[in-house]
Amino acid sequence: MSKYGKEILIGIVPVVLLFLAFLGLNIIPILMVAIIAVSLLYVARPKMNMDTKADRTKNVRKPAPLSFDQIGGQDRAKHELKEALEFIIKQDDIKKFGIRPLKGILLTGPPGTGKTLMAKAAAHYTNSVFVAASGSEFVEMYVGVGASRIRDLFKKARTMAQKENKESAVVFIDEIDVIGGKRDGGQHREYDQTLNQLLTEMDGIHTSDTPRILIVAATNRKEMLDPALLRPGRFDRHIQVDLPDKKGRLHILNIHAKNKPLADEVNLEKIAEESFQFSGAQLESVMNEAAIYAMRDQAEKIEQRHLTLAIDKVMMGEKTDRETSREERERVAYHELGHAIMAEVVKPGTVSQVSLSPRGPALGFVRHNPQDDQYLYTKEYLEERIMIALGGAVAEEMFYGNRSTGSRNDFEQALNLVKMMMDSGLTSLGIVDREMVTKEELMKANASILDSLTARTREVLESYRSVFIQSLGILLKEEVLSGDQFRNLLAILKQRSSA
Image (cartoon, rainbow, N blue to C red):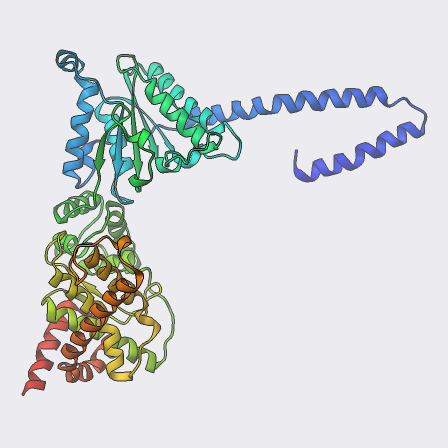
């Protein structure tokens, strides 16, 4: 019945009953029958809803099986996970060596690195039933609901495995930090009850039972989890799923390029270089956005420029239609030239693009092209990164005598790098615990580092003042300069200024 039909009925029924009473009829039996009918309908309604949900569940198609070969990069993590899964497959060898099969595997790492995909591949690898849930699904305002859903999840896994004649089931819980966070000592919190039920279920898993249950959980914040959840006998293996390196990024790009028409000149290895610190999800988005750009241009195939535009979009957002004044465009141009010149001075060949095209919140940007993936940083390297970050603000001060709000993100980056230096014992403070040093000492050390590096940055950029002036008009006209164009321009202008 529609909403309006209910309102009309509610309005008519009392009028009819009052009219019958006015005529002298006994309306009490009618009221009793109506009350009984409404009560029966109310009781039967949940069952009808459950049946409807059950029918919908029956019609849902199972996801296509996913193998480890279909997951790009993560070779180390995949190898470690496969080794853990062997305990489910090789039962005879397990009994021979007296090995206790694993109950739980915890996948940790940044978002978009493929933790869910690896759990699905684990189910396919072991020929197991796959049941998935998110930690947020167990959070309710009603006491006991989360614990009940945990019980239902494990019951569902066992039932599905028996129904499909499988010997094992993989239960995947994403965002487990939502329900597995550290307990504060309270005994009646809903989250604690849910976590206690999960611990009970894990302790109740007898590895010799059939079907066997393996729990695979994922989190981006391992440090938030309760120690009781992390101990051996529950989550026995902790596997780090990191951002892919250059080789892994190339593998992921090739996987997502299989169903896309690429032009002959496309160099995915160059795209892998330019996408440093991209996750698997971001790389998939790069290929998808490149295909969208090609379709917009009505091109037959995806070209290298489409992939370059796609990287910019994934990093910075879509181009915006914001109109800026001539003075503002010139300020942005000087700012970006400051970043680009400083980057080429401290690390030649690293500028990939200089752009004045607004993207997302940025009015312009410089995209850097790291030559090699780097995970260990020296003091000199971090100081150079800070100088590159400060280059934009210093350039504005050189030509305008002041700064603008466009340097806010640059300063945040510089402060984070200074913090990394302090935590790594690379400052005058030496090897210290930040909590043992007063705020005044930290501020003094921070100001000393930034003032010194700002002075060095200004000294370097002042020697390129003529390059700024001569390249301003070219950048304003072209709006976008590739790394090679910028380096050629820089070399020509530098020769002219020295002549």
